[in-house]
Length: 113
Length: 118
Image (cartoon, rainbow over all chains, first blue to last red; front, side, top):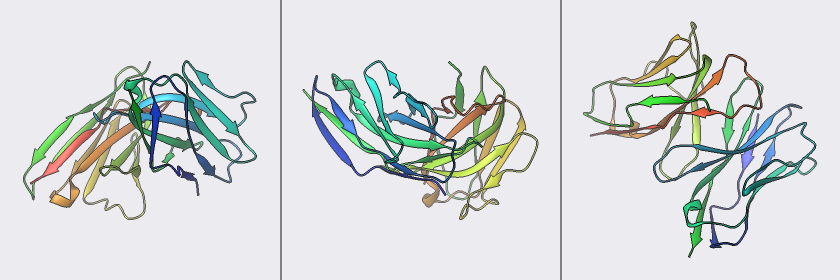
């Protein structure tokens, strides 16, 4: 069975600073995908970044980067230059080969002005 | 990017009635769609996997007779909450996987449906 662990229920960051949201995972599958999503109060799930289990380099998408440490089974999200609009719930998720996703409990990020 | 449309975005219904939620893939064909449920401040929990032209696969603990899923075409899956009760009030969200089934595609999520049973 797949498991995603996000140990930070809530995080605060000052505007324009960087923040790291933690995510560890557990799976016995050799092939998997790791995703991060942002969920604002409106409820929609916004895709941020993807990391494949065989990818050699860490994924980056604009201000988002994924610190992938396969041996430690961690996939932390780094948000650089935080903006007020980044305040939201962030979910780490793992998808298996069948397309089924397992989500962590989420981290609520609050960006302070 | 690919778009998944979920309708309605919110619904209020009386206890004992049934509610249908639609999930459509607008610009791609989805052989598989997933239905999730999310309680406030909690994570998304997979309810069932909907496969086009066949019966849905339900996760443990999900009542298949209460949450009816139909996936009649490659672009539409429906979730019907039958005989709804206040405890069924939740945020329901679908996601779709295209026929190519690439692992590295983002999961295309609908906008979600907030169901309130009164």
